[in-house]
Length: 81
Image (tube, rainbow, N blue to C red):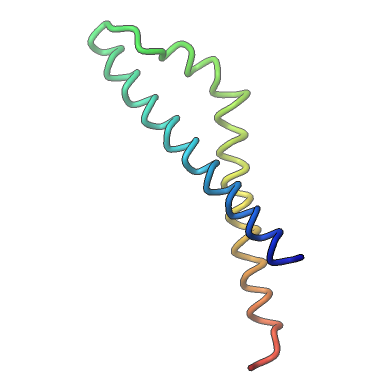
């Protein structure tokens, strides 16, 4: 049961990581477009920053910490084989 939970947690974190990377690439392209006076969605990105991007970053950081701590605890308190 625990292994299945961590499998799904790692999958969710991986999908969240790809979403965060996609958001960063979108921001970079939109900023380049803004400097060239081409609308590539920078205003939309700003509108989505607080309700979508910040929680995604927070979930990614919290999940990485929880995953790392739980792995450390499992190794620390597992009986030596």
